[in-house]
Length: 291
Image 1 (spheres, rainbow, N blue to C red):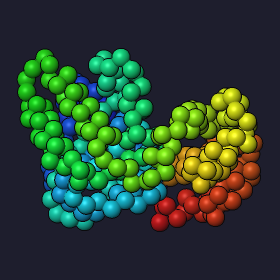
Image 2: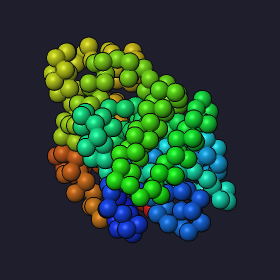
Image 3: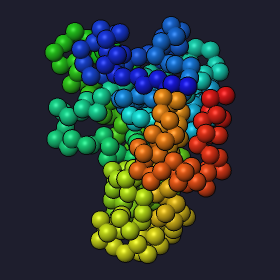
């Protein structure tokens, strides 16, 4: 299977938009069968998907999440996902935007990546909105109204409202994974996770991260084990495995190419590593996904 890569520029062309964002009413997308591929796919852009009413399953980075009324998903570029609705006429909104969507609006250029809702490592991405459902839907109603305006300031208005949604969810909802909350409250682990996201493809050993954080490997390992229940090595390996799975979904890459992409010495070493951490060889995993 050749996994589709949806690009926001493609969506904009189809929608005849000039901005670096696209906003859709979910019920219209499902009814018209638009922009929701029926196979696993990934994006080159960020996506906020809010389901106010509906049911189904959302597979995100090989993890299954149940879709129900009042659920919101935050997807980062590169994440593999597959959206399957089982209910008729789901309602909600889909907001797609490029990484630079806020760059002409906020002084902190990486602000979107600093929030505990978007995560390229797949850590975050799902929230229930019971605590702020009416407030969230009020903001969404404003967006759907503003998108129809013919004004020079429409984009700035939408940026403000999308930012309001992201901050609202970050502040007023609870992460479904308590481990994420623990990590976000520890300065050293936050720095470690940012470092890991930057270097995991080429740096596979705990010593590298400890040295860059000016601590000993034993200290960093003890901290990880105490706060997350996982060793430093396990966290590093999990991130590498996730990326390997994302690449294996795309049949255009040979297993040798993936091994090279992830800085393994050879195909044999990569295969042993992958099987030790998943119970399957890369070829077996690819076959299971492509059934």
